[in-house]
Image (cartoon, rainbow, N blue to C red; front, side, top):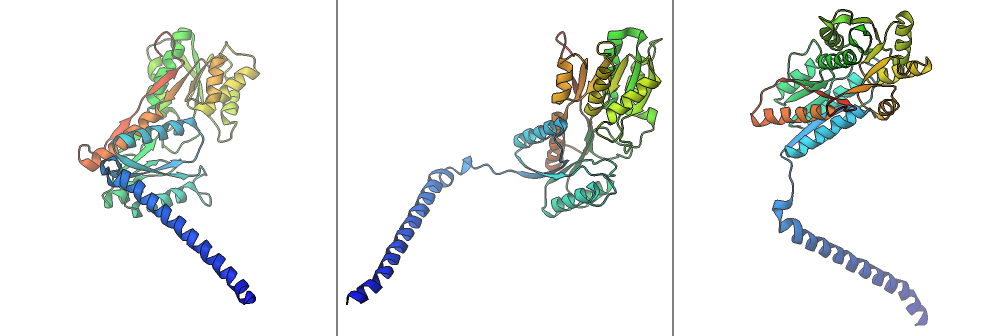
Length: 339
């Protein structure tokens, strides 16, 4: 009898443990039901359901421009009651194995298959987005490409920066500082994919526009920054070696700004050569604080994001047609109450 009782003991212990676990599960289920009933089921109006699903396909980079761009996308998505989904593509060169074009195409096809209500794409370097626009149009999905400047091939809807106005602002700033004795050196982007000849670049044309009718003021030279991380520095050093009379350097982006500043520091010319930079990051801000860079013209990336979402939603609800939008900029630091 004793042996039989000992054999039953494990069965009894297991049964008690099983009953305890079952009781705990029942308690958890009841708590979940009570929480659901006391919140969502009793207050369905408090549950937020997005009206639209918008996909944004963006480069995977730590550049502050894109951080502000995403802030603008999210801010306007919230305002427009849209769910924003972001796909990131790597910044590899077009044409290489596993290239950006293949990545972007894959994300774009996923967005189409997921029946997104709208698609926003930051145009990768060298990529023609017409095929994307045509595919989206065939699916009746609003498609809005974004770019720093409008490529010459663009004929459809899109949101871009305005390097022409940026060049005008930079030129105006150095004219105010140096007058008609200014001798300008311009550092342009290495990206030639937008289809512009050298002197047709929007930034260059903006600088040139302001100098008209100002005898003595001139563009002494213009160079393109190189692809490498030191591309802005190398371009600036080469330009100053060939044109030592340059007393103002105008830069198209943050890389060119930082590179030009390093050259001026290395040559001991801080305060003698005016640098007007572009965009904003911690290094550019530091150079401004140190007085190496006089000012930076910051493209309004947040406005670009807000405009992209607004344009997609406007087409969905029938209040807007496809259009091309150009966003502005601001200058840092602000001096005397105005840029």
